[in-house]
Image (cartoon, rainbow over all chains, first blue to last red; front, side):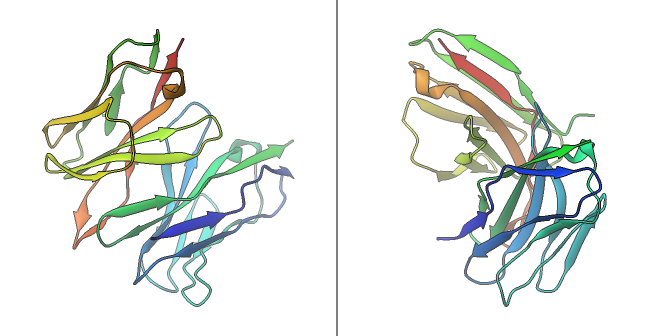
Amino acid sequence: GDSVTQMEGPVTLSEEAFLTINCTYTATGYPSLFWYVQYPGEGLQLLLKATKADDKGSNKGFEATYRKETTSFHLEKGSVQVSDSAVYFCALSNYGQNFVFGPGTRLSVLP
Amino acid sequence: DTAVSQTPKYLVTQMGNDKSIKCEQNLGHDTMYWYKQDSKKFLKIMFSYNNKELIINETVPNRFSPKSPDKAHLNLHINSLELGDSAVYFCASSQVTSGRADTQYFGPGTRLTVL
């Protein structure tokens, strides 16, 4: 079946550092790919998404590019802030209504 | 307006009790889900309903029973609660287009503690 793998962390960075959270997937066909963010005590919310190969999703300074050749959707941000501290989930949606989430990566940004 | 709402936000109860969690979405989506999130933040899908019909029923104890009175509501009833049921339960909804679910919208979660 479909699956998502991401670095589990925790990832600890200083403010203004560059962030990369790796995500790779296994799926048949052409799934949609998503990054969700969960702030402490809250539900998951969509950060960005891409629905086809080479699409780039972006939001709040975060970016991820759908790479079909490497089956990856790595999340990047050029300069993180303390307010970015959260858990980040990579996910995919494929035909047959499966929505698969990765295990989540906890990010802590220190001032 | 809250897109996906859940009640209650917190639920503390004794082992063996029966409890329910309610979920409502006002997005007009046709599919709703229940997830369980453990203390390590791992998210596990439990159930999925499309237009009031059960689609996904992952391996969960039959003490858990979802009920969807209409496509805007999906409730979760849990019988004979056990310590291992303690977790955060999330409701979500999405629209399915051409057989594939679009963005899922999550509720704020219900933190269940079984004593």
